[in-house]
Length: 377
Picture 1 (cartoon, rainbow, N blue to C red):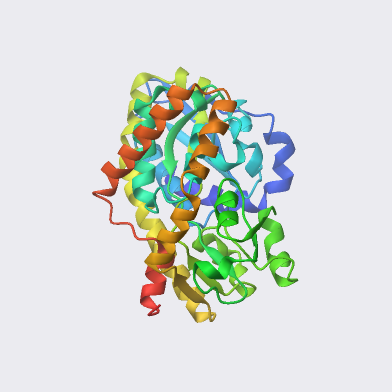
Picture 2: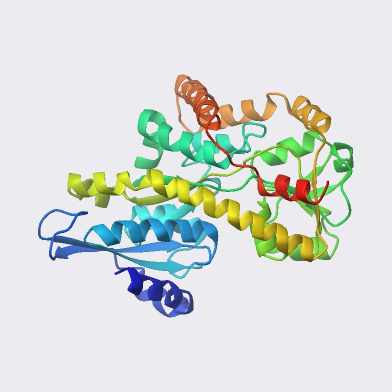
């Protein structure tokens, strides 16, 4: 299974448009087979997985390695489809819930109404530690009933949250600290829009594919709500060669999900086996992210890019300008979405406590920060 899955990964990208119509109607199934470590005696499992990203990103590789680990020891086969060849980015949550794919990588930002508690990651100045965030969210999914329910109510089970890098601010012209945001037109999404507006910038709502041309034509001065590695991979440094970490931290949450009814119907030993691989998955995924960010720095510097970091005084001023306003906006949105106020408050307390706990053992440094240090900035 291990080698054949590598072939499927490569083939999935090219087969995209041809397969969509037929595969959309097909869910995974389980049938007879020689039982192994991952399944009950006499059972095997054949699943389809959707990821809107390319297969060679560190995020995709980490999840693929997790699939290899469960395939090698259990009667499980995962057929992998990339770059929206099975489900689009915005259709992954309902698509997996409905069984149009058995597994999928999704991000919470696309579903503010369905996943209101998860939007807490859009509140700035909570953390820039990708490892602490993922481990905290995995712990909360296990222990916080309201947080787990918002995914289960949508028809999915979270196998693990997925590490994503912090956001940054990229501009065509150099950004001289916090004061440099005044009057600039900056693409931003979600709660981060409110934060940069309070710093004097004008947030502009644009989809990711529109950013390159908008900066190139001068429609906007730059963009945020984008991690360093993804921005450079998409060649956005060609039009915005100044990339600066403003200290706002992480802004999004990724998750590897499986259809809840499928998960609930698996033998207990299969569920336990799959869960046992998650801690190693997170460790490996963080290492892959760090390696990719280092390679990104190489590419960025070789192309003439300028990495930067807001001075500590500017970060403190920025945080002071924002205050609790964005946090309160998130709380109000969550209550409006139907979450009880005491559950919102309890989740926030648990989230902040978990971040502090897991940050103590984390060695993750944001890639843009490391790149700026390496460049002497």
